[in-house]
Length: 250
Ligand code: GEK
Image (cartoon, rainbow, N blue to C red; front, side):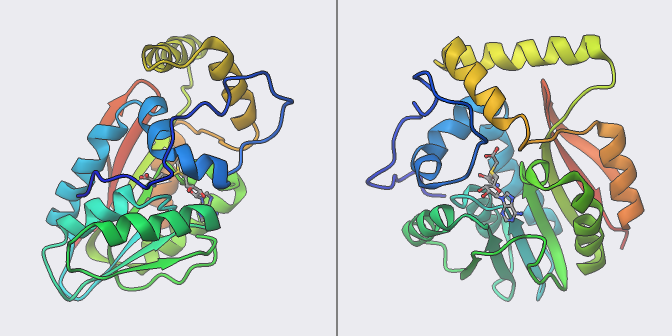
């Protein structure tokens, strides 16, 4: 996977000054700082990405489609590309932010793996899914309106071949308010340790309040099973960030 940078890639200082409150959007200013932002904000992100390659290698099937839904700059897309052990698979990255897709094209082109990658600038709620073996939603479902999540997961499960999987990474919330407080505090400590100020942490938190809606593990599991996956396991957790593997039996 390439570690080369976009010439205009920058450090995240988007919330460093006092700003009027507004909802977070995946626009050009976010795309420009995104690799730095996600690495410093999401505990475990730098572990999860290479593990997506490992999981993909295990579950990709010859002649199938692999999807990265909410691909941003293509970090998971590239991990999947390197994990797919067949040259007859189709790899598709989807994101509805033009700024993200434009830059994603750049990172895909820098990577020298021969498997072609198709990028679609589309809403994942509308994108066509079929004959899938591995689908990734790496911190994307949390941004989809809660009332649309069931329909999306149902479409993914229906499109998944027997023996195929969904890798679902999410920020979660906890049923116990006490645990919620502890895990939130630890997440904020992680951000502080990565150089974010209290002002940055609190302004980002309010910008995300109405945009990123976390759910509990119990809610995720129940919906994945109702959607048509046979087994759901948590393969990674760091504070309030988890990654699940939803498996359709062979
Ligand atoms: C990674 N997976 O680096 N349709 C299409 N894209 C969407 C939608 C939607 N309805 N909603 C949100 N997005 C990536 C990181 S970031 C996670 C994913 C984060 C897109 C949005 O434009 C953004 O690029 C991405 O989902 C979420 O492994 O920033 O915490």
